[in-house]
Length: 475
Ligand code: FAD
Ligand code: AMP
Image 1 (cartoon, rainbow, N blue to C red):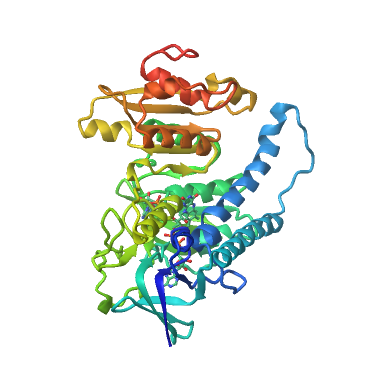
Image 2 (cartoon, rainbow, N blue to C red):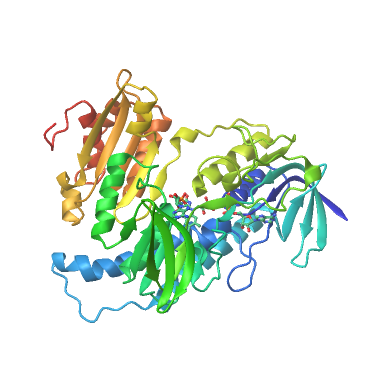
């Protein structure tokens, strides 16, 4: 029997599940197919983000940060604690219950919105037909959709010479599930995921070595932010080796030896476990059969236009499996926009206004373009920055670290980018995203009243500093 739907969504991550809910809200009959099985062996919605990405990593970052504060930062407040210890299984159980609460919440939202949720592997064939395949490879059901949204997401990239054994050589999921603190942890790749996972285990006592092939640290971030981040992370004990391209792994007497090439010389480091965090690749294998006609590029990304249309009419693709940053909120925004377009409405995603956050301590966040990028493109710009140490709130919180930096067009004063490192910048950045979405000038932010005392005063003062009129620093 063939079931027909207005829309069939493949993948129930933050791209797919949001698209499915929005389609249903718009009155379209919608099915969402997902094949994720959680660590208990049960189907779970929410994709990478809820199950093995954003949410579990933030749960562990929070637990490890609380522990680290209690041991290292509370004494400055006069709080003394004796016999503090970390119970890793309890930390992991807390993480699991958060994940379970949120993933089961998606199931409830599907029910309430009348989204038909189907467990299995969806494969798009010709004429908008989707086969749902079970674990044994058998076709369980065949569906036809007027529109198809492909949202299969991404999986961890691996190094061919260092395959995952999921015991000693781990991917990000393995690094989120460790049941005890490794004495020495090697992390290959000092990108967003490597830094977040490295921070978790470093705070809990691991000696963490990050091996990064590039010579620059965090080249996607503003150069001053990256420099301050490196300084802070090194102070925290992260051993960051740049220009260190990992080539292979060998067994040593007391653990594992990770071999890398640095400045044309062979070097190595001995660790107990290794996490490979070298990026992610689109999870498009088997999702699109050749007769569907949907095009992918040489790296497996589904080729789409700015509005997420593939080359086949009525077939759309969103999220990590298409061009652009691999971020949950980017996937969700594309999902909502595609739903609106399918329903005949208008939608707009401003890819220049996608916030980036790294949830280390201090946090790092930005939106828009960097000073260096703009200068290289020949833009005439003005910048203003302001340190958190000059705000009363950051000092009262005992977190006087980092700064806010604003970049504006020299002639029109339009905001082109905002870059931050410091306390709670994951929250502060959103004011700047809104400002950029509304095409605000730095003057607009400078003339907006910010509560005192609050961390957002650093945003206000950075905006004032663009015009050299910050009050609480010498311009
Ligand atoms: P996914 O979340 O990958 O979901 C795709 C779903 O589709 C999966 O459930 C998959 O099993 C399923 N699927 C795939 N193929 C098929 C098929 N053929 N049939 C049926 N189902 C299929 N992003 C942030 O914005 N903030 C963060 O803090 C953050 N932290 C992260 C931390 C870690 C450790 C990791 C690994 C990622 C993190 N990310 C973060 C990235 C974020 O998780 C992804 O950008 C986001 O999940 C992408 O959403 P998606 O819907 O495109 O795909
Ligand atoms: P991200 O793209 O944020 O996930 O970060 C992944 C990081 O891993 C990038 O900075 C890459 O340069 C780095 N990387 C990729 N391959 C290697 C390798 N063989 N050795 C060390 N670092 C690597």
